[in-house]
Length: 393
Image (cartoon, rainbow, N blue to C red; front, side, top):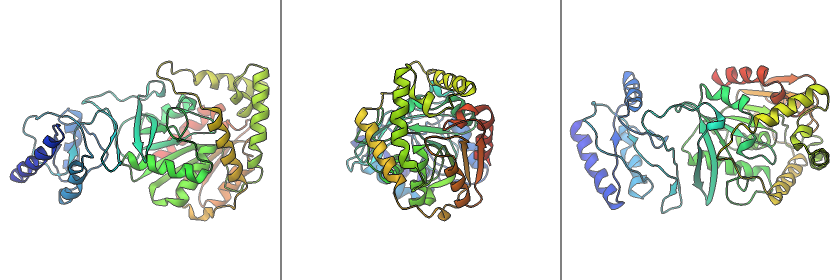
């Protein structure tokens, strides 16, 4: 085993030298107690995990391919002699890059013994490039296992996620939120169809190196999540659909008029449009709206760029098209699915959540009383534990 490691290390060293870099590798068999040994080595700072790809010893040629093509860049140093273990963990990149073929290279910026961040207000900002688009994202929670990827709503950037929803999930799960193409700090132009947005989401997740994810979605994010799981069912393990509805759902196309009207009302009262769009205008709804908007301001540094008017209008065009399109066959969705909404959703009518529940086999549905589109934010104390439990099963 040591001779094999030495031989492969020599080959790696030659490839590394061509790129003016140094590399560090850990080898171990992916079975039994040795998995725990690998975890301990990472925790103790023996190596720095740089990619979410772990290859068996019989997959050495495939694991070496990105290196030989210039697709892995980083820096590491030699350490003490490692135990006689067996798979491959590469060490080291500290930036996002692309190789000569334009394939994505992921940046984790992880250092040995880095503390686990479970507060969205302090989640580090990252970028990754895939297909010529640089996606902005934030990640938090303990690394490892299947991540939970958050799909955000109309006009939203990374700053629009409620920390009272994300933080409880991030206590036990690796959480990733991202800006759609052309939104916030992500480059490119916003697509004019939900299906194209789903293709972008697939490219982003694939670039990060994940072949299985859980999805948490809200509103437009729920449309994108449905389009993604219909096209790539193998990518998704569990699905959370909140404040959303199916393709071709009745009155989804009216969201454009509702959005413009409530934005005008908010402007006249010097309020955030989400106070009108997401919440009822009774005393409870107004209080919940103000509290929600205040929570979105908890992050005070490294905030995201605002969505541009043209990008916002293109998203609305895509939503109208989604609402007027031929429905998808949702019987194909056999993934465990949690659906939630308020009982008075003016943007995506609440009865469409019930429609999703009927059409997705064995799905779970929760409707919160006296609340609107943002029912999960008004009732976050009740909803967050439900979402945590569902995703942890």
